[in-house]
Amino acid sequence: MTRVLGLAGWSGAGKTTLLTRLIPALREKGHSVSTLKHAHHSFDIDKPGKDSHRHREAGAGEVLIASGSRWALMHELRGAPEPRLGELLHRFSPVDFILVEGFKRDPHVKIEIHRSANGKPWLYPDDASIGAIVSDVPPTGASLPFVDLDDLPGIANLVVDLAWPLDRTLAALSA
Image (cartoon, rainbow, N blue to C red; front, side, top):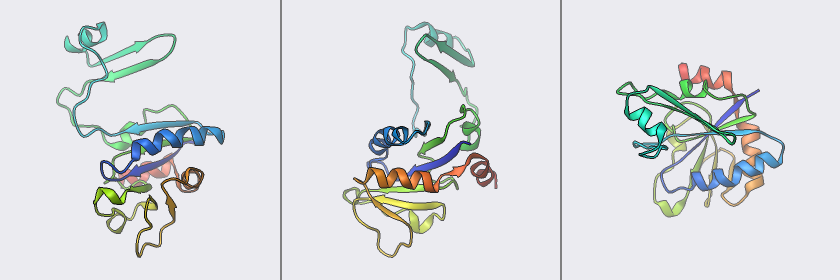
């Protein structure tokens, strides 16, 4: 059964760095993991001059590239609205965990990643869907589970303990 958990925090808090350490830790425990990363800007994974890029530039709505090592599907929105988190979660193959980086305002269960040197405010006081906090400093007045940023086994345990089943996540996102 696929379960979903978000990592939310301000830019510079260390979400991506933590994910790159957390994925192997979860895999060592025997779990399969996929990730969904939200980008706040336009991005391109294709290179100008390549055939797939030329297909997109010519107007293809989707371009699928396949090789003996991997396949990737690019979907052009062409002015359509950005897909919501629930729509994107439906596109994944079954895995044990889908870890979502970003989408911090959506109501799925999340771990807040906080770094004191960032100087940004905590998210947890204003977001009831935050189930735990990972930081270099303990939060004051929070009754949520807390794990230090360097405690990778503790963070992996939080993921296993807190992640919601996909159907519960989808229900929360559509409420």
